[in-house]
Amino acid sequence: MKKELHIFFTALMFYTRIPCPATIDHNPDYLNKASRYFPLIGWIVGSVAFGVYCVFNYLVAPEIAVIFSMIASVLVTGAFHEDGFADVCDGFGGGWTKEKILIIMKDSAIGAYGAIGLVLLLVLKFQGLVQLIDVSDNPKFIIYNSQFIILLLLVSAHSISRLAAISIVFTHQYSREDASSKSKPIAQSYSWREVVGAFFFGLLPLVILSYFQWQMFLVLIPVFLTRFFLARYFQKWIDGYTGDCLGATQQVCEVVFYISVIALWKFI
Image (tube, rainbow, N blue to C red):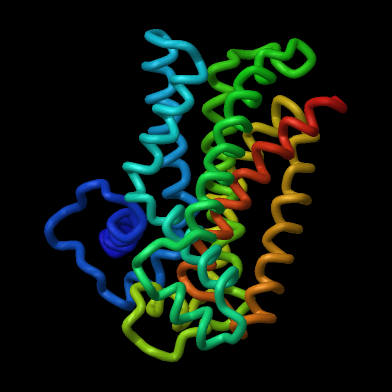
């Protein structure tokens, strides 16, 4: 149990800005095992985003509350995944060889492709969240507490998108050959515990949500189709993935989840 707590706090320290015990460090072995808790981190980020939304929803318009909710999720993670998305946009937008793409993604400066991509991503996420919250009051779907449904939706979005991202580690090779990347230890090896843990924490919120409406499982189709095509695209250009690719996958799959739920609710 003590070891598992250490692994969990390693995941919390690596993937968020939440303070952890002083004894926790970037131990490569624990960091590798921490991938099993990556979707669980989504529970935390989704819950924080929901809490901030609820507070500000009592004070301001729902749209403004959504913006504060998005700000909270960015602050909790330190824009870890958004930065990866921007780097992927710059790298794959401006590079035409594996070496050039990897060099551009390594650069900390953001370029035109990254800036434009990030703006469009955030606009999509904002609009998706606003419509999601509005549709959650649909009487065809909700006969329970709508706030609880919103919580489950946010937690599911963050956990499933992280599951989609970390699953690439289980099926593809790490692209960079240097050992300087912070994500390198995650890619070194994994066991059945990482796979089972990731899928358990990634899917459990959706299982609970599907108790209210079983068709919610259908959102897994577009999310994992997106994951499949992204992974194939990364494989084609850089022979695998990098940490930035995982961050980009998480962000895109999160937005796809919101859009898929909104589209699904039009037909149930």
